[in-house]
Amino acid sequence: MSSTASGKSGTWRNWGGNVVSRPAREVTPASVDELAAAVRRAAEDGLTVKPVGTGHSFTSIAATDGVLIRPHLLTGIRDIDREAMTVTVEAGTPLKRLNLALAREGLSLTNMGDIMEQTVSGATSTGTHGTGRESASIAAQIRGLELVTADGSVLTCSEKENPDVFAAARIGLGALGVVTAITFAVEPVFLLTAREEPMPFDKVLADFDELWAENEHFEFYWFPHTGNTNTKRNNRSAGPRRPVGRLAGWFEDEFLSNGVFQAAQWVGRAVPATVPAIAEVSSRALSARSYTDIPYKVFTSPRRVRFVEMEYAVPREAVTETLRELRAMIERSPLRISFPVEVRTAPADDITLSTASGRDSAYVAVHMAKGAPYRGYFTAAEHIFTAHEGRPHWGKIHTRDAEYCAGVYPRFGEFTALRDRLDPDRRFQNDYLRRVLGQ
Image 1 (cartoon, rainbow, N blue to C red):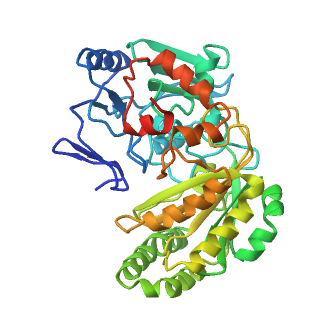
Image 2 (image 1 turned 180 degrees about the vertical axis):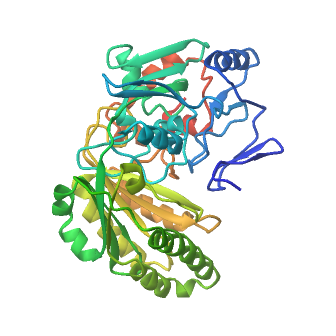
């Protein structure tokens, strides 16, 4: 099965396998007009509407018992404006295709997440991000949006046109309309040098502020039950290009990061007591390395091991304390965690419901293998994240509701008021939005 979510016998499943829905019907529009007609027809039939990309969200944000819109015919680049340095793409375009197409044109996004299987609209609507000192999420690189609203009309927005919609719709959760095209800011393609190296957990925490300040893109993975982390520093480089060798790349990215890791998950699930020993070995398997390449080849990597994930954005100054509490919780619990904890950062942005809206943020992500019992771990982690006014990633597992979100998002009311205006009949409603945004 590919990384795209599957739909067999009228059911839809997400990539992580933890969300299943049964839509009344599926529509695959080949144009914006066809999509608008599908929304109008759904209204006539009294059905809700949900677009779905590749199903990489772990929440039920795309689940519907109404009309499921698959955007895979709405793909490709509409326009490249070299004067404005923007590219306009259809909403169903996978990030992978966008990155390849931009590279061919000598262009690149400034920052991106660590996988590129998602559609551009699915990734931005849920707040997908990488790590960056000054450069923010993929949605923060949006310069214009086109969306079909609840009455079937096509609305365009930017900083100048419908700026209130633009502020919210860049991370719109599918609540304001169906995004049909996105205009991104781009720049001439550049080189990044990645430095990956193991570092003790205590040293990373002690030096976190310097590591953050001295690198354009800093992130690290901590292996629970060990004192080990793997750090990654990406910085712009004058070159020359020195990509990871094919054999070394296969050994480190495929064999160690995916193959051995998958085997470790199986052994850990069969014999949980072995997890700390396996974690110790896994955390030492990846040795230091450095390479220089174009951005998407440095920022992104294949993820073949299926998992479920929870991620919260905490204020950046709270991240080391959050991680210390997470370690203490794991150490005093019977939990056996075989997946590393991922830590990244983002600068404050001006998007209404961005997890970095109005505050410099650090992201802490916890994972469990697909099918593993994750609730005990995620619940305990969530207690820690929420104690630090954490904001849940919209596309990753969490239990927060509208009351909580209103307390941690200063512009929450602005978003819900806009939703009342654009979708008064809740054409784009589902159970998830009812929970996180309220009625």
